[in-house]
Image 1 (cartoon, rainbow, N blue to C red):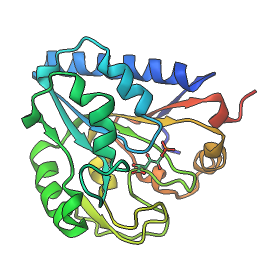
Image 2 (image 1 turned 180 degrees about the horizontal axis):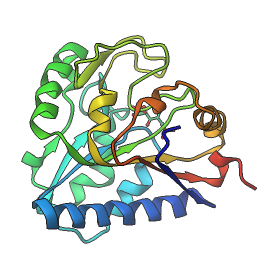
Image 3 (image 1 turned 135 degrees about the horizontal axis):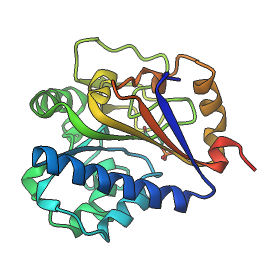
Length: 228
Ligand code: 6PG
């Protein structure tokens, strides 16, 4: 695990979500005060859903938020498995972030087209202020999976044969995901104990490829940390 990392443990996923929501809002306030805007990369999967619901009830300077995703599944935009749909329904449709400042990955066009589109988006908006990431039970993050090899010089990758359905995805690269003021991992549930242990012992998992200059923060619940 990266030298400079901070682990915050929470007895429940609810407390993790409440703390993560506060950290996101604080990060936004700082970025907007400094730069006039807040560029956040959203995590997919199920863990962030409660955080997005809490954000939908928060007061924030939404006019200055800019929304990106770390990865997307190659599915129609209205498919229930889309990472973008989950965030829209839980949060983004309920606040006043201008639509022109929300950048879903066009993975419905297929991995190749989706990458071409998001390569340009990333090139225009890097560095990010905050990147949210999950971790899968095999140590993947975003759609960067063990054993997958991607060209070094890409901001966005086409992913085929994903072990987590659907097979085809688009993912920001480890370099793009690391090009951020802050990176916050959100890890919940007993199923993450083994990959978390492997990561801590230094195994070369995709999560270990995320190495931002300022280090990483990990918000994990007791179930994931195997704490009583
Ligand atoms: C995806 C996600 C993926 C997710 C992890 C954890 O598209 O599947 O981007 O990287 O963050 O698999 O998922 P859970 O939060 O559902 O455990």
